[in-house]
Image 1 (cartoon, helix red, strand yellow):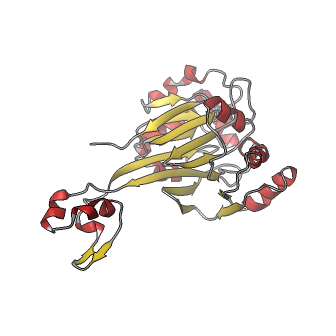
Image 2 (cartoon, rainbow, N blue to C red):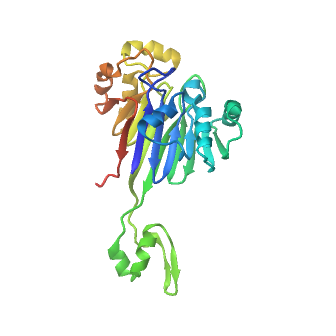
Image 3 (cartoon, rainbow, N blue to C red):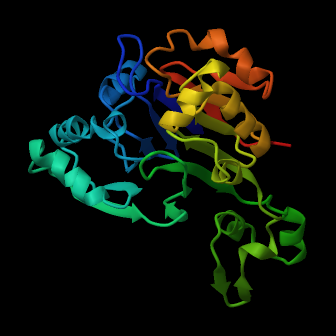
Length: 303
């Protein structure tokens, strides 16, 4: 099961009813966090999820509302006696920024691995995940992320029988293994159909509309996009601060042909995002004004 939880939906500063934007993805024992602003740990506890199994943390950029919760998160991981390495991904300068923050969290019992993104986009393969980082348009270097998992084709038992492949080899071939015995070599492509549609989630905050967003979000099952301003009359302010309105986010979702969009990263002045959701739905009907702790279990399309 591919689990997604939007831990917080706030931008700029946490509010009593709204933590700063961060996202947790869980699949097949792998745990990925995107951004770690102030309050992320509390949001995790409210959800009932533990930070201990976090394997990978992706940072969109280094404004405080997206990274200031990291020292506390690492102290908690250290106090939980975690020893497995944690991998961090972010724009160039990641190691310098993180090491500066961790002055207050020295002597951690686990290793930190750094992957610094450069250029317009970069593919990162991490265990079962394919992660595409893509540059967006903010007032500092900022990236969005598409996280996807593959799905193998169907096993063709008729082919296996026609080729006289022993029954005890079938499950291994389904798992992608190649088998060699005295009768020959058996490879997965001999018995597997074409790959089927997997699952894809795209997350982007702190940006103006740009060509990379619909390009990398294309056909996502879930598109999580910043909606700093609900009112279309705030367009000039959105342009000034390099953010988006609900309507602009919906336009990106429509162009990308996603199945559903969750709006997030609201301005502190946007007290009731749902009051403005029609500004998005008139463009992209499957728009949702997300709230803290909103989650979904994404499943393969059986069709």
